[in-house]
Length: 581
Image 1 (tube, rainbow, N blue to C red):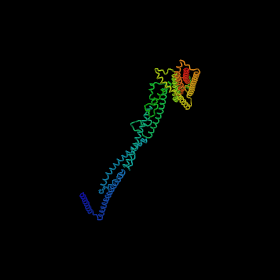
Image 2 (cartoon, rainbow, N blue to C red; image 1 turned 90 degrees about the vertical axis):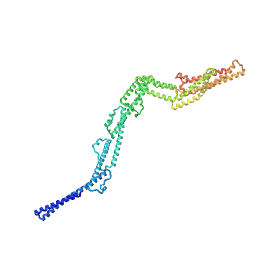
Image 3 (cartoon, rainbow, N blue to C red; image 1 turned 60 degrees about the vertical axis):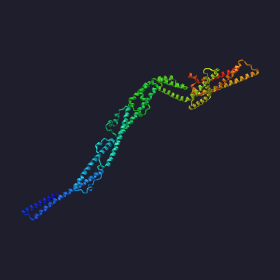
Image 4 (tube, rainbow, N blue to C red; image 1 turned 180 degrees about the horizontal axis):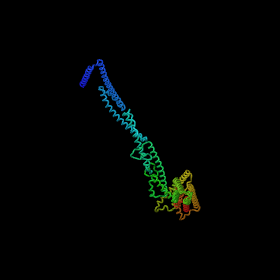
């Protein structure tokens, strides 16, 4: 290479020398003066110098341009590295033995191009993330013009750290979008269920909220406004559902009442069984389609109207039935039904339309409830009355048994009769305590409720007082008979002292019989002394004899018991007198 350059220079020098020699020959022929020759040579040297100067200037400019290009490339490379968050590349520091400027520039250019390509790719990544962020943000905000504008990328910060921040922001927006879509889907499912139960058009309902919700495959509007409108639609339908549910449950309650009043057959009730089974259901438990539709409720209302008309036609029968029920309860509990209105007058008033049958039924129902409540409070006393009257029956039987002279004769079933007599004596011995306890219970009941305890219209305490008086009279009669026997015995003894004893054939027999009969009389007196004290609850049920006639006066029952006792006492007294005589 150096030889070729030297040869070229040598050739150029030869050419310039030959040209100068040829110029001198010309000048010689022309006859140019030395002055002119020197002037021309000076001009020639100046022109050559000018040419060299231009070339040097051009070379300097080229060198400066190369240096500027290198500096610009290095600066751009440093700016790209800074924007991308990477360490700057220092070419001169990394390669101190670099050659010419062109070589240095040729090394920088590929790196710069590589960094520009990486910056372009990084910028595209930023654009993709920013476009997705802008798109999701617009969907959340309810805007639809996000595609008309391109997001601006800050090229001074294209670092991975910034890109990661944008990715996190995008992930947050995607999560929010997913949550909103799930929220909207839940709202749509709730709306679908409500529309199904209410018999409404689901697509028409959601299209009124937002048209994008109709297409299940397409994108849905997830703005706050859409979610709020969905929530408002759900709240509105729930209010409608609650209103219809309350209406249907009221109809079902009325239907059950009418069924019970008119004893509707089970076969007729089966048609509306799905209504009555939901009579106490809550709002979330009613999910069957068309359960609360307008047509279905109208159908139920038509059935209730039919039953109401049927009820009106059967009201007379219902009033009679309820009245009979009330009378039966009063009969069983020995209470007197208040004669506030004659049933014939009530029926006539219903037929004429002067009285509302429902009001009459309501009054009877109230009376039934009142009577049932009072009957429950009377239960304990009535049970005691029953025991008391049963004890009175046993006392009467025992007195009759004691009057039987053949009661100790061995016979078929005599041991069973004897066992019953023993049980009867034990029960009769409890009669005074039973009467006292019954009176105490009755007084407490009357104080607690502020009314008198009656038995078939008669105050129970009056019955107990009358029974007590009769029992005292019965005891006085016993004492009178005992005194009479004692006086008769004294007269017989005085006669024996004055006139002597004249035994007769029948006297030994009478002497033998007297102790047995007097013992029986004593036992009778002892049992009748323990006369039963009436228990208010048991007195209502009555004795076995009173059960044959439900309306027998309890005082008459007590008088019968006491009369039986008196007759047994008088019989026993007569037999004892006869035997002693």
